[in-house]
Length: 393
Image 1 (tube, one colour):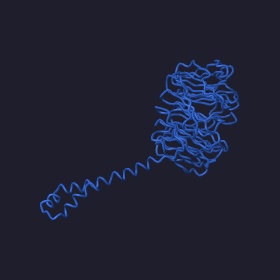
Image 2 (cartoon, one colour; image 1 turned 135 degrees about the vertical axis):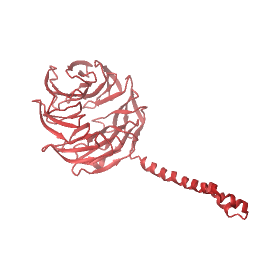
Image 3 (cartoon, rainbow, N blue to C red; image 1 turned 180 degrees about the vertical axis):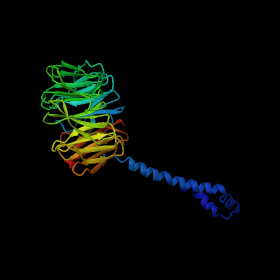
Image 4 (cartoon, rainbow, N blue to C red; image 1 turned 30 degrees about the vertical axis):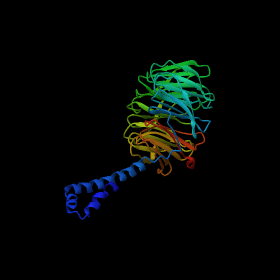
């Protein structure tokens, strides 16, 4: 306003010529300009509100979209992240000056997983190579190769340093990470193997593919015990999987929005969870109740009562849901969204109890720290952020 004040002072001058000059059409234009100056202030305030950052720690070591994330199961502050800049990092929550770069991959790091004892970290890349890292020292222990396509996911055996990985080339590989030795290769899928895991008892392997099938394998012999496909199973490719704690059921989500529950021992579809209208991106099972949560690009997180195969709560988002994580054995779960927000939900009420702001682009993955006090998120925006969730135990 001050830059325009001379014009107003001159208006009241005794000099008639000056007065006429400042009362013609150009003066009206000046008044509009003053109004326009006020508007950016309002916009700035809106921008500041949108740019509110609720994170207590931001990791900015990456120079590309961050795709993969793992929190140590034994060390509450240790986090691994991997990105499109072909780099991985080990870093610590609350220690902004400490980071170990995981060097050597020649393409985006698509998957990260800690062994259950926290001693080893596996990093998988779109170059088809998996690197094994000694966590205490941060040193590279060795490299595992074989797959002819990018690594889609990595899982550790529940009882030892055996590693399982699915590839874009339709194969699944298993190695001994202590000896850096090849153990087995499981072939049969007709397209990229998008999800998979050992059963919690370690006795069976389940894998899901873009070919719309679930395959159940014997880890030792490599035998394909069951192939689950066709009606009443998924009509489109699988995206996600969760296995019940008693190793009896596999829960799978697919691009067509369907969720199916399969009896692992018989290979039969025993139930369907149908409510989503777009690709199911994540399936997560509650530890303390017979509930499951599914997140979809249809902008919904649905909490299911598994005893009745019915939705008990539908949690609406402003954009597609990309990932979710239950907070330990609590009733709370967190969701990551294409809108860049991380939300915490009460599964009993279905209410959103917290929205965490900070990211400026889609969330790719979420992970809860070992002490359940921190929620870590990674995003297309190139950062990892840490939010405090101690109140949601």
